[in-house]
Length: 124
Length: 259
Image (cartoon, rainbow over all chains, first blue to last red; front, top):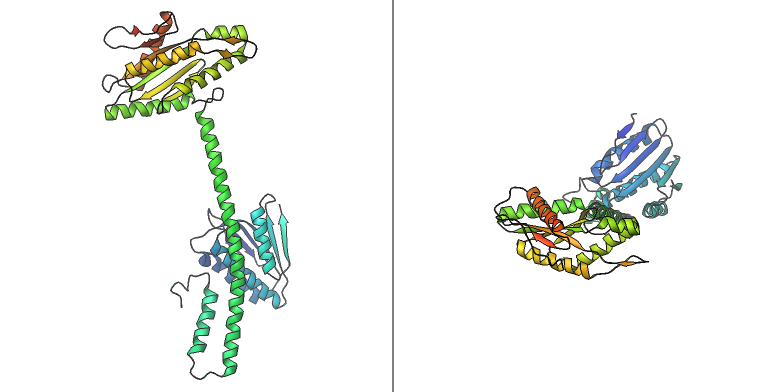
């Protein structure tokens, strides 16, 4: 299984999913033209990983802006992880936010409240 | 199915809707099947509603963040613009803004055959103020004089500091005669004013050179400023505290009171 590597752009996230470590790192800002199209390879990677590698997943998010569609997609990704954890997999989410960024801290807290997975809010 | 179903971020929700529609279409439905379909749909609906509530809140947070950063960028841009166009000491326009504005005014005057005038103002014997009372006192005179002139100029005129003790007023749509009259009013009001330097109160006078562009005789804005400069030189030579209008045909004539 291959590494998924999407470089960050002016309005899209940088993504790096590594099947050897199970780390899914997503960074940057997200207001893509088409959010579901942007997120599709990430879903597909997780789908494949959860069926073939079946290892643990650590989702590391370092996001400074999410538009509404991307927020929905992020919920869907976390729902997938929740389902995967339901099958017995080890899954954890780390939400990194800039210490001065109250809005991103609260955004992380909203996700944390919704998702029943180990979820850490970490200021940097 | 929704027409954008394939691309929609609500793909899963549309699928649930489709499923519910299929259940309804079945002719003979047992109570059991109906309840099962209802429960499934209710589950989807509840989850979607909960998500939507959070999505709306997250969306509001992100909107606020975007708005705040936009506002911050705007006020930074305003600060930068102000710093780039303002003379720090006198808080009037600086040289670079004046030159830009004069360029634009001259260009419009040429293009639309309108007049534009400029008044070059120089404080008389400013070196003496600096030498006698110190440079801080000199700065104080510059600031107070700038504030005084700023009150006198008309709406639409642009007044700024060229540097040192030299100021410029650009007067669009204004003849040399009108500019000279305004220049004399300003000169007189400065002569009457008292400048409070803390320990002393002093008086100063200014000389000014006025030049006009009437839509025909000049090629460049540089020549216009040069003419104002020549007229100012003459005002100084004729004894200071006066305004002189540069005249093309004959020699420039003084129109100050000079006392």
